[in-house]
Image (cartoon, rainbow, N blue to C red; front, side, top):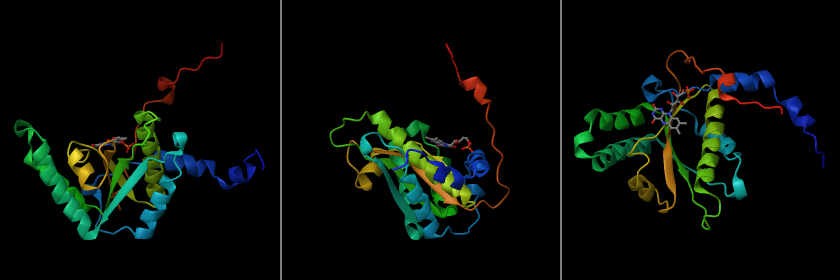
Length: 204
Ligand SMILES: Cc1cc2nc3c(=O)[nH]c(=O)nc-3n(C[C@H](O)[C@H](O)[C@H](O)COP(=O)(O)O)c2cc1C
């Protein structure tokens, strides 16, 4: 077995990789066209997500894909859950409506979840981190296919109600909803403060 990865290095276009990362953008359902994403492309996104790093090989990422009528049903259910879990004084009807509209405007909805290890040996935060890595793989793959995606959290999506309805256990967590669709307009520009502001580099 070779300890070197030259064969892979040749296959990886460094400029394409950088371009992909820089162009990954969060694009919201209101900016999607009504073009449906092919299920085979969604599977490609999911199978790349599966290559995320994982401490102890727990592979804690779980995805629940909702397409077609199922996505509309989920949108309606999330609106109900929002009204149920939000303290009465804080309820904004527009938020419930948005959960329904987001579902209608998306091609597929992917619930992002973390399956807790039975023994709980690996710290929970590391399992959440592994799922976030999987989502990044998924999002980068979407970008490569010209598909817009957006990780949405919030109290209805990350609720125990949704977790239970998906058949997850009490130690498992819903970490968000990933909306996907083709953008109808220009691909948005990103913005980041310089990396030098976020790095401490010591040599002695
Ligand atoms: C864990 C996580 C949860 C997020 N939840 C929301 C959300 O609930 N609402 C929202 O508008 N954006 C959410 N985002 C997306 C961010 O708004 C987005 O990444 C940020 O604006 C930077 O834009 P970019 O992804 O295009 O670089 C979330 C991102 C992450 C990583």
